[in-house]
Image (cartoon, helix red, strand yellow):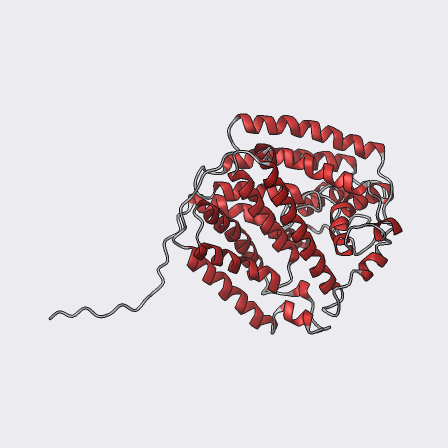
Length: 398
């Protein structure tokens, strides 16, 4: 079971299977019915991923090993916190506190120093996972405190996606460390997920009401939640999780239903679907290509799996090409990684990217895909140890 949950190809199949099962609950009146064509397509991809996962497992590219504590971890932690303090000063406030006090003039999506924010957030995400690997390799209170300090910034800047993705990567590191998964371990992981989803929903309510309320009434109304859900035993705050898991499929199906015929636009497809967004938004103007968007069931439900954008540009051909791109990159990345101290971190981040492709195109989301660069980069470029200066007592020559 542990090997299955650590294999990116199996994660693809399980994540989309969970999304399909969640969709079948029918708790929102916004969603269209899924067509047979789309269901057959997913069935074919599941079968292909089974063989891909078996091949990857046979070549021994899914492994775990312990690592020693990094000598630079304190320096990296200080650098990250200094970076966020600079951004707080640049934005004249901390996003969480601004929202809690009801600052209506603040836009959390515009937080950060341009360009620097991308590097800071992605380094923070990578360092969090790498530090967690050190924590479970040799548990001690100091490393635990440092790990918590790595997590706190995502809460302060109200970046729920960053928080959830970092913790998901950490979960994959933990799963990789297990020889087998016992029933009680599954229970613990399930309980942890329930807690995270609850916090995720609360943060959603806070953000939506701009700190005025923890109530889920607004999200239930605008998403046309059914009476069946409202009368169920499921706490309303979990509706956020239901939406995030199921709405991407709704947007994908709606895009297929409502999009105009594809115009075989290969250049914008490559630019906007296969390149990180911090690059594509600059090269788009140079190439004179416009970004097109999926046809959403509602404008505020932005996630639409990593297939929707490709359909807009190339139709079903785009969806097939996108799946082939996933197969190739997912198979090659474990071979590119060195079997060194960054290997487990890189594999965990890859698994997270595959998992969240269920929600949106993570290949184009710099906040996650860029994290894959660090394990490879640091494997080939040795980072010099940074010493923290301390004052030593003078030694008498007498």
